[in-house]
Length: 465
Image 1 (cartoon, rainbow, N blue to C red):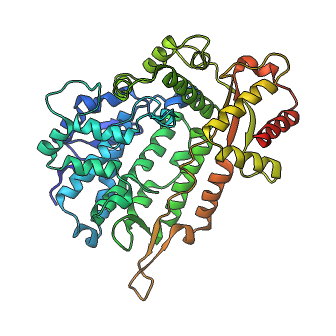
Image 2: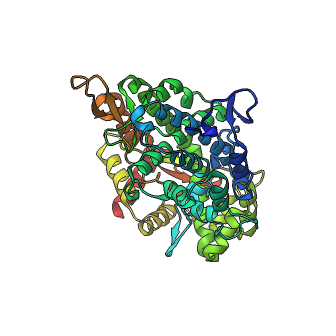
Protein backbone atom coordinates (compact mmCIF):
# COMPACT_ATOMS: atom_id res chain seq x y z
CA UNK A 1 0.00 0.00 0.00
CA UNK A 2 1.17 3.53 -0.73
CA UNK A 3 0.13 5.43 2.38
CA UNK A 4 2.81 8.08 3.00
CA UNK A 5 1.57 8.54 6.58
CA UNK A 6 2.67 4.98 7.37
CA UNK A 7 6.24 5.43 6.17
CA UNK A 8 8.81 5.09 8.92
CA UNK A 9 10.37 8.26 10.30
CA UNK A 10 13.43 9.04 8.20
CA UNK A 11 15.60 11.75 6.73
CA UNK A 12 13.76 14.58 5.04
CA UNK A 13 10.39 13.88 6.66
CA UNK A 14 8.59 16.60 8.55
CA UNK A 15 8.14 15.58 12.17
CA UNK A 16 6.55 16.96 15.30
CA UNK A 17 8.75 16.34 18.33
CA UNK A 18 6.82 15.34 21.43
CA UNK A 19 7.94 14.34 24.91
CA UNK A 20 9.67 12.01 25.49
CA UNK A 21 11.94 11.76 22.42
CA UNK A 22 8.85 10.89 20.41
CA UNK A 23 8.99 11.98 16.76
CA UNK A 24 5.66 11.91 14.91
CA UNK A 25 5.95 12.10 11.12
CA UNK A 26 3.44 14.54 9.61
CA UNK A 27 2.64 14.73 5.91
CA UNK A 28 1.48 17.98 4.34
CA UNK A 29 -2.13 16.86 4.05
CA UNK A 30 -2.27 15.76 7.68
CA UNK A 31 -0.66 19.08 8.67
CA UNK A 32 -3.53 20.91 6.98
CA UNK A 33 -6.01 19.07 9.20
CA UNK A 34 -3.91 19.79 12.29
CA UNK A 35 -3.69 23.49 11.37
CA UNK A 36 -7.47 23.85 11.19
CA UNK A 37 -8.60 26.33 13.89
CA UNK A 38 -11.10 23.86 15.34
CA UNK A 39 -8.29 21.39 15.99
CA UNK A 40 -5.85 24.06 17.16
CA UNK A 41 -8.42 24.93 19.85
CA UNK A 42 -7.18 21.85 21.74
CA UNK A 43 -4.00 23.76 22.64
CA UNK A 44 -6.12 25.54 25.29
CA UNK A 45 -7.51 22.35 26.86
CA UNK A 46 -5.39 20.53 29.42
CA UNK A 47 -5.20 16.78 29.09
CA UNK A 48 -5.69 16.05 32.79
CA UNK A 49 -7.78 19.00 33.97
CA UNK A 50 -7.68 19.13 37.79
CA UNK A 51 -4.59 16.95 38.14
CA UNK A 52 -2.32 20.00 37.88
CA UNK A 53 -3.42 21.02 41.40
CA UNK A 54 -1.66 17.89 42.67
CA UNK A 55 1.02 17.19 40.05
CA UNK A 56 2.42 20.53 38.81
CA UNK A 57 3.70 19.00 35.57
CA UNK A 58 0.21 18.00 34.43
CA UNK A 59 -0.22 20.98 32.14
CA UNK A 60 0.09 19.17 28.82
CA UNK A 61 -2.80 19.47 26.40
CA UNK A 62 -5.32 17.49 24.42
CA UNK A 63 -3.54 18.85 21.36
CA UNK A 64 -0.28 17.12 22.28
CA UNK A 65 -2.09 13.92 23.22
CA UNK A 66 -4.03 13.87 19.94
CA UNK A 67 -0.81 14.11 17.95
CA UNK A 68 0.63 11.34 20.11
CA UNK A 69 -2.36 9.06 19.47
CA UNK A 70 -2.06 9.72 15.75
CA UNK A 71 1.61 8.72 15.83
CA UNK A 72 0.89 5.64 17.94
CA UNK A 73 -1.89 4.60 15.55
CA UNK A 74 0.60 4.54 12.67
CA UNK A 75 2.54 1.95 14.70
CA UNK A 76 -0.59 -0.10 15.34
CA UNK A 77 -1.52 -0.08 11.65
CA UNK A 78 1.97 -1.07 10.55
CA UNK A 79 1.91 -3.90 13.09
CA UNK A 80 -1.43 -5.13 11.78
CA UNK A 81 -0.32 -4.86 8.15
CA UNK A 82 2.42 -7.34 8.96
CA UNK A 83 -0.28 -10.03 9.02
CA UNK A 84 -1.31 -11.15 5.55
CA UNK A 85 -4.92 -11.89 6.51
CA UNK A 86 -5.31 -8.35 7.89
CA UNK A 87 -3.53 -6.69 4.98
CA UNK A 88 -5.74 -8.48 2.46
CA UNK A 89 -8.88 -7.20 4.20
CA UNK A 90 -7.97 -3.53 4.37
CA UNK A 91 -8.14 -0.84 1.71
CA UNK A 92 -6.06 2.32 1.68
CA UNK A 93 -9.13 4.37 2.53
CA UNK A 94 -9.65 2.23 5.64
CA UNK A 95 -6.16 3.15 6.84
CA UNK A 96 -6.59 6.86 6.17
CA UNK A 97 -9.95 6.76 7.96
CA UNK A 98 -8.40 5.13 11.03
CA UNK A 99 -5.61 7.72 11.11
CA UNK A 100 -8.09 10.61 10.98
CA UNK A 101 -10.28 9.05 13.68
CA UNK A 102 -7.17 8.75 15.87
CA UNK A 103 -6.13 12.34 15.23
CA UNK A 104 -9.64 13.72 15.88
CA UNK A 105 -10.84 11.38 18.63
CA UNK A 106 -10.59 14.15 21.27
CA UNK A 107 -11.50 17.14 19.11
CA UNK A 108 -14.72 17.58 21.10
CA UNK A 109 -12.97 17.98 24.45
CA UNK A 110 -13.38 21.16 26.46
CA UNK A 111 -12.03 22.19 29.90
CA UNK A 112 -12.79 19.69 32.68
CA UNK A 113 -14.99 17.69 30.30
CA UNK A 114 -14.90 14.43 32.26
CA UNK A 115 -16.09 16.26 35.39
CA UNK A 116 -18.69 18.50 33.78
CA UNK A 117 -20.20 15.68 31.72
CA UNK A 118 -21.29 14.05 34.98
CA UNK A 119 -23.70 16.93 35.69
CA UNK A 120 -27.34 16.11 35.06
CA UNK A 121 -29.68 18.70 36.53
CA UNK A 122 -33.42 19.15 36.02
CA UNK A 123 -33.36 17.42 32.67
CA UNK A 124 -30.19 19.24 31.56
CA UNK A 125 -27.14 17.24 30.50
CA UNK A 126 -23.74 18.83 29.93
CA UNK A 127 -22.79 17.88 26.35
CA UNK A 128 -20.66 14.77 25.90
CA UNK A 129 -17.34 15.49 24.24
CA UNK A 130 -17.94 12.65 21.76
CA UNK A 131 -21.14 14.32 20.54
CA UNK A 132 -19.35 17.65 20.24
CA UNK A 133 -16.63 15.95 18.21
CA UNK A 134 -19.21 15.13 15.55
CA UNK A 135 -20.57 18.69 15.60
CA UNK A 136 -17.10 20.23 15.42
CA UNK A 137 -15.99 18.05 12.50
CA UNK A 138 -19.16 19.04 10.64
CA UNK A 139 -18.65 22.68 11.63
CA UNK A 140 -22.02 22.80 13.39
CA UNK A 141 -21.08 23.38 17.04
CA UNK A 142 -22.04 26.73 18.55
CA UNK A 143 -19.26 29.24 19.15
CA UNK A 144 -16.69 27.84 16.73
CA UNK A 145 -14.22 30.16 15.04
CA UNK A 146 -15.52 31.16 11.62
CA UNK A 147 -13.69 29.29 8.83
CA UNK A 148 -13.98 28.96 5.09
CA UNK A 149 -13.84 25.17 5.26
CA UNK A 150 -14.90 22.65 7.88
CA UNK A 151 -12.76 19.78 9.11
CA UNK A 152 -15.18 17.53 7.25
CA UNK A 153 -14.36 19.36 4.04
CA UNK A 154 -10.65 18.93 4.65
CA UNK A 155 -11.07 15.22 5.33
CA UNK A 156 -12.78 14.76 1.96
CA UNK A 157 -10.48 17.03 -0.04
CA UNK A 158 -7.09 16.28 1.53
CA UNK A 159 -7.44 12.75 2.90
CA UNK A 160 -10.03 11.28 0.56
CA UNK A 161 -12.12 9.84 3.39
CA UNK A 162 -15.78 10.05 4.34
CA UNK A 163 -16.02 12.37 7.38
CA UNK A 164 -19.19 10.62 8.56
CA UNK A 165 -17.31 7.35 8.73
CA UNK A 166 -14.58 9.03 10.76
CA UNK A 167 -17.25 10.41 13.08
CA UNK A 168 -18.85 7.00 13.56
CA UNK A 169 -15.52 5.48 14.59
CA UNK A 170 -15.29 8.18 17.27
CA UNK A 171 -18.85 8.32 18.62
CA UNK A 172 -20.55 4.98 17.93
CA UNK A 173 -20.85 2.04 20.26
CA UNK A 174 -19.11 -1.05 18.95
CA UNK A 175 -22.39 -2.90 18.45
CA UNK A 176 -23.68 -0.10 16.21
CA UNK A 177 -20.86 -0.53 13.69
CA UNK A 178 -22.19 -3.00 11.14
CA UNK A 179 -19.00 -3.59 9.16
CA UNK A 180 -16.34 -5.83 10.76
CA UNK A 181 -13.58 -3.62 9.33
CA UNK A 182 -15.03 -0.59 11.12
CA UNK A 183 -15.17 -2.50 14.40
CA UNK A 184 -11.52 -3.43 13.92
CA UNK A 185 -10.51 0.15 13.14
CA UNK A 186 -12.43 1.48 16.14
CA UNK A 187 -10.72 -1.01 18.45
CA UNK A 188 -7.40 0.65 17.59
CA UNK A 189 -8.56 3.82 19.36
CA UNK A 190 -11.08 2.33 21.81
CA UNK A 191 -10.37 -1.03 23.45
CA UNK A 192 -8.43 -2.51 26.35
CA UNK A 193 -5.06 -2.09 24.62
CA UNK A 194 -5.74 0.76 22.21
CA UNK A 195 -3.47 3.50 20.89
CA UNK A 196 -5.27 6.12 23.00
CA UNK A 197 -4.35 4.38 26.26
CA UNK A 198 -0.87 3.54 25.06
CA UNK A 199 -0.23 7.23 24.43
CA UNK A 200 -1.84 8.77 27.50
CA UNK A 201 -0.32 6.29 29.97
CA UNK A 202 3.15 7.01 28.67
CA UNK A 203 2.65 10.73 28.04
CA UNK A 204 0.95 11.45 31.36
CA UNK A 205 3.73 9.63 33.22
CA UNK A 206 6.38 11.70 31.46
CA UNK A 207 4.72 15.01 32.33
CA UNK A 208 3.73 14.02 35.85
CA UNK A 209 7.14 12.68 36.79
CA UNK A 210 5.86 9.22 37.77
CA UNK A 211 6.98 5.81 36.46
CA UNK A 212 3.67 3.93 36.59
CA UNK A 213 2.49 4.40 32.99
CA UNK A 214 5.88 3.60 31.46
CA UNK A 215 6.48 0.19 32.97
CA UNK A 216 5.25 -1.89 30.05
CA UNK A 217 7.20 -2.92 26.93
CA UNK A 218 5.72 -0.86 24.09
CA UNK A 219 7.65 -2.51 21.30
CA UNK A 220 6.94 -6.05 22.52
CA UNK A 221 3.24 -5.29 22.81
CA UNK A 222 3.09 -3.76 19.33
CA UNK A 223 4.93 -6.75 17.89
CA UNK A 224 2.30 -9.01 19.43
CA UNK A 225 -0.71 -7.11 18.03
CA UNK A 226 -3.02 -9.17 15.85
CA UNK A 227 -6.80 -9.61 15.42
CA UNK A 228 -9.36 -11.81 17.13
CA UNK A 229 -10.93 -14.87 15.52
CA UNK A 230 -13.63 -12.81 13.82
CA UNK A 231 -11.13 -10.28 12.53
CA UNK A 232 -13.10 -7.37 13.97
CA UNK A 233 -11.06 -6.40 17.05
CA UNK A 234 -7.50 -6.13 18.28
CA UNK A 235 -5.94 -9.14 19.98
CA UNK A 236 -2.48 -10.17 21.12
CA UNK A 237 -0.52 -13.25 20.27
CA UNK A 238 0.53 -15.50 23.12
CA UNK A 239 4.02 -13.95 23.10
CA UNK A 240 2.44 -10.65 24.15
CA UNK A 241 0.63 -11.89 27.27
CA UNK A 242 3.20 -10.51 29.70
CA UNK A 243 3.33 -7.17 27.90
CA UNK A 244 -0.49 -6.92 27.92
CA UNK A 245 -0.58 -7.81 31.63
CA UNK A 246 1.89 -5.08 32.48
CA UNK A 247 0.03 -2.63 30.24
CA UNK A 248 -3.20 -3.23 32.18
CA UNK A 249 -1.28 -3.08 35.46
CA UNK A 250 0.17 0.28 34.39
CA UNK A 251 -3.33 1.61 33.80
CA UNK A 252 -4.43 0.30 37.19
CA UNK A 253 -1.48 2.02 38.88
CA UNK A 254 -2.16 5.32 37.11
CA UNK A 255 -5.78 5.32 38.25
CA UNK A 256 -4.75 4.42 41.78
CA UNK A 257 -1.90 6.91 42.16
CA UNK A 258 -2.84 9.71 39.74
CA UNK A 259 -6.25 9.86 38.07
CA UNK A 260 -8.16 8.91 41.23
CA UNK A 261 -5.64 10.20 43.77
CA UNK A 262 -7.68 11.54 46.70
CA UNK A 263 -6.65 15.17 46.10
CA UNK A 264 -7.37 14.89 42.37
CA UNK A 265 -10.80 13.47 43.20
CA UNK A 266 -11.29 16.39 45.59
CA UNK A 267 -10.76 18.94 42.82
CA UNK A 268 -12.88 16.88 40.40
CA UNK A 269 -15.74 16.73 42.87
CA UNK A 270 -15.42 20.44 43.64
CA UNK A 271 -15.63 21.30 39.95
CA UNK A 272 -18.60 19.02 39.34
CA UNK A 273 -20.65 20.41 42.24
CA UNK A 274 -19.79 24.03 41.42
CA UNK A 275 -20.79 23.50 37.79
CA UNK A 276 -24.10 21.91 38.82
CA UNK A 277 -24.84 24.91 41.02
CA UNK A 278 -24.07 27.38 38.23
CA UNK A 279 -26.17 25.48 35.69
CA UNK A 280 -29.09 25.34 38.11
CA UNK A 281 -28.81 29.09 38.76
CA UNK A 282 -28.32 30.31 35.19
CA UNK A 283 -30.25 27.65 33.20
CA UNK A 284 -28.26 28.34 30.00
CA UNK A 285 -29.35 27.06 26.62
CA UNK A 286 -27.32 24.25 25.13
CA UNK A 287 -25.92 26.52 22.41
CA UNK A 288 -24.86 29.15 24.95
CA UNK A 289 -23.20 26.50 27.07
CA UNK A 290 -21.39 24.86 24.13
CA UNK A 291 -20.24 28.23 22.84
CA UNK A 292 -18.81 29.08 26.22
CA UNK A 293 -17.06 25.75 26.76
CA UNK A 294 -15.46 25.70 23.32
CA UNK A 295 -14.16 29.26 23.47
CA UNK A 296 -11.94 29.07 26.57
CA UNK A 297 -9.19 27.05 28.23
CA UNK A 298 -9.12 25.58 31.72
CA UNK A 299 -7.80 28.59 33.60
CA UNK A 300 -9.97 31.12 31.80
CA UNK A 301 -13.10 29.06 32.43
CA UNK A 302 -12.33 28.85 36.14
CA UNK A 303 -11.68 32.57 36.44
CA UNK A 304 -14.88 33.57 34.67
CA UNK A 305 -17.03 31.09 36.57
CA UNK A 306 -15.66 32.33 39.88
CA UNK A 307 -16.16 35.96 38.88
CA UNK A 308 -19.82 35.27 38.09
CA UNK A 309 -20.62 33.09 41.11
CA UNK A 310 -22.34 34.91 44.01
CA UNK A 311 -19.93 34.83 46.99
CA UNK A 312 -22.51 33.21 49.27
CA UNK A 313 -23.45 30.51 46.73
CA UNK A 314 -22.27 26.91 46.64
CA UNK A 315 -20.24 27.60 43.50
CA UNK A 316 -18.73 30.75 45.03
CA UNK A 317 -17.66 28.85 48.15
CA UNK A 318 -16.11 26.02 46.15
CA UNK A 319 -14.44 27.93 43.32
CA UNK A 320 -12.66 30.24 45.74
CA UNK A 321 -10.33 27.32 46.48
CA UNK A 322 -9.28 26.59 42.88
CA UNK A 323 -9.75 29.79 40.86
CA UNK A 324 -6.81 32.00 39.97
CA UNK A 325 -3.94 31.82 42.42
CA UNK A 326 -5.98 30.25 45.20
CA UNK A 327 -5.54 26.67 46.35
CA UNK A 328 -7.95 25.49 49.01
CA UNK A 329 -8.79 21.88 48.27
CA UNK A 330 -11.46 20.09 50.26
CA UNK A 331 -10.11 17.59 52.82
CA UNK A 332 -10.98 13.93 53.32
CA UNK A 333 -13.18 13.01 56.27
CA UNK A 334 -14.20 9.41 55.53
CA UNK A 335 -13.22 6.88 52.85
CA UNK A 336 -15.14 3.76 51.90
CA UNK A 337 -14.20 0.98 49.47
CA UNK A 338 -15.42 -2.49 48.65
CA UNK A 339 -12.26 -4.03 50.05
CA UNK A 340 -13.36 -3.64 53.68
CA UNK A 341 -14.57 -6.78 55.49
CA UNK A 342 -16.61 -4.75 58.00
CA UNK A 343 -20.29 -5.31 57.03
CA UNK A 344 -21.19 -1.77 58.12
CA UNK A 345 -18.56 -0.26 55.84
CA UNK A 346 -19.67 -2.45 52.94
CA UNK A 347 -23.30 -1.53 53.53
CA UNK A 348 -22.42 2.17 53.58
CA UNK A 349 -20.44 1.82 50.33
CA UNK A 350 -23.21 -0.10 48.53
CA UNK A 351 -25.89 2.30 49.77
CA UNK A 352 -23.96 5.37 48.63
CA UNK A 353 -22.93 3.86 45.31
CA UNK A 354 -26.51 3.11 44.29
CA UNK A 355 -28.15 6.20 45.82
CA UNK A 356 -29.76 8.64 43.38
CA UNK A 357 -28.87 12.33 43.31
CA UNK A 358 -31.92 13.50 45.22
CA UNK A 359 -31.22 11.15 48.13
CA UNK A 360 -27.52 12.04 48.09
CA UNK A 361 -28.48 15.70 48.40
CA UNK A 362 -30.76 14.95 51.35
CA UNK A 363 -28.00 12.90 52.96
CA UNK A 364 -25.50 15.78 52.71
CA UNK A 365 -28.04 18.17 54.23
CA UNK A 366 -28.55 15.88 57.22
CA UNK A 367 -24.81 15.39 57.65
CA UNK A 368 -24.22 19.15 57.45
CA UNK A 369 -26.71 19.64 60.26
CA UNK A 370 -25.40 16.84 62.49
CA UNK A 371 -21.68 16.65 61.85
CA UNK A 372 -20.69 19.53 64.12
CA UNK A 373 -22.12 21.11 67.23
CA UNK A 374 -23.69 24.54 66.96
CA UNK A 375 -24.60 26.04 63.59
CA UNK A 376 -24.82 23.62 60.65
CA UNK A 377 -22.24 23.68 57.90
CA UNK A 378 -23.21 25.93 54.98
CA UNK A 379 -24.43 24.40 51.70
CA UNK A 380 -21.48 23.18 49.67
CA UNK A 381 -19.15 22.71 52.64
CA UNK A 382 -19.56 18.92 52.46
CA UNK A 383 -19.01 17.03 49.23
CA UNK A 384 -19.51 13.33 48.53
CA UNK A 385 -17.38 11.92 45.74
CA UNK A 386 -18.54 8.77 43.99
CA UNK A 387 -16.28 7.72 41.07
CA UNK A 388 -17.86 7.21 37.63
CA UNK A 389 -20.20 4.26 37.58
CA UNK A 390 -19.24 3.34 34.00
CA UNK A 391 -15.88 1.83 35.00
CA UNK A 392 -17.07 -1.28 36.81
CA UNK A 393 -15.37 -3.62 34.36
CA UNK A 394 -12.19 -3.76 32.32
CA UNK A 395 -12.58 -4.77 28.64
CA UNK A 396 -11.09 -8.15 27.86
CA UNK A 397 -8.57 -8.94 25.15
CA UNK A 398 -8.46 -11.98 22.91
CA UNK A 399 -5.23 -14.01 22.96
CA UNK A 400 -4.11 -16.00 19.93
CA UNK A 401 -2.06 -19.18 20.29
CA UNK A 402 -0.83 -19.68 16.71
CA UNK A 403 0.60 -23.18 17.30
CA UNK A 404 -2.40 -24.59 19.14
CA UNK A 405 -4.95 -26.91 17.57
CA UNK A 406 -2.44 -28.92 15.56
CA UNK A 407 -1.13 -25.74 13.99
CA UNK A 408 -4.53 -24.28 13.15
CA UNK A 409 -4.33 -21.81 16.02
CA UNK A 410 -6.72 -21.17 18.87
CA UNK A 411 -8.09 -18.20 20.81
CA UNK A 412 -8.84 -17.57 24.43
CA UNK A 413 -9.27 -14.42 26.50
CA UNK A 414 -6.55 -12.63 28.42
CA UNK A 415 -8.66 -12.89 31.58
CA UNK A 416 -8.62 -16.69 31.23
CA UNK A 417 -4.97 -16.85 30.23
CA UNK A 418 -3.83 -14.65 33.11
CA UNK A 419 -4.89 -14.71 36.74
CA UNK A 420 -3.04 -11.41 37.10
CA UNK A 421 -5.54 -9.70 34.81
CA UNK A 422 -8.44 -11.05 36.82
CA UNK A 423 -6.81 -9.73 39.98
CA UNK A 424 -6.28 -6.31 38.40
CA UNK A 425 -9.95 -6.09 37.46
CA UNK A 426 -11.05 -7.18 40.93
CA UNK A 427 -8.70 -4.76 42.68
CA UNK A 428 -9.71 -1.89 40.41
CA UNK A 429 -13.31 -2.20 41.55
CA UNK A 430 -12.60 -3.19 45.13
CA UNK A 431 -9.60 -1.06 46.04
CA UNK A 432 -9.18 1.87 43.65
CA UNK A 433 -12.84 2.82 43.31
CA UNK A 434 -13.28 4.60 46.63
CA UNK A 435 -16.11 6.80 47.87
CA UNK A 436 -14.98 9.81 49.89
CA UNK A 437 -16.59 12.48 52.01
CA UNK A 438 -14.79 15.83 51.73
CA UNK A 439 -15.13 19.00 53.79
CA UNK A 440 -14.22 22.61 53.03
CA UNK A 441 -10.77 23.34 54.58
CA UNK A 442 -12.19 26.19 56.67
CA UNK A 443 -14.39 23.73 58.57
CA UNK A 444 -11.94 20.89 59.18
CA UNK A 445 -11.36 21.93 62.80
CA UNK A 446 -15.08 21.80 63.53
CA UNK A 447 -15.39 18.15 62.59
CA UNK A 448 -15.07 15.63 65.45
CA UNK A 449 -11.45 14.57 65.86
CA UNK A 450 -12.34 10.94 66.60
CA UNK A 451 -12.57 9.17 63.24
CA UNK A 452 -14.54 6.28 64.74
CA UNK A 453 -17.23 8.65 66.02
CA UNK A 454 -17.31 10.49 62.70
CA UNK A 455 -17.70 7.32 60.64
CA UNK A 456 -20.35 5.98 63.01
CA UNK A 457 -22.35 9.18 62.53
CA UNK A 458 -22.02 8.96 58.73
CA UNK A 459 -23.05 5.31 58.66
CA UNK A 460 -26.00 6.05 60.93
CA UNK A 461 -27.10 8.82 58.60
CA UNK A 462 -26.66 6.58 55.55
CA UNK A 463 -28.71 3.86 57.22
CA UNK A 464 -31.41 6.39 57.99
CA UNK A 465 -31.59 7.36 54.32
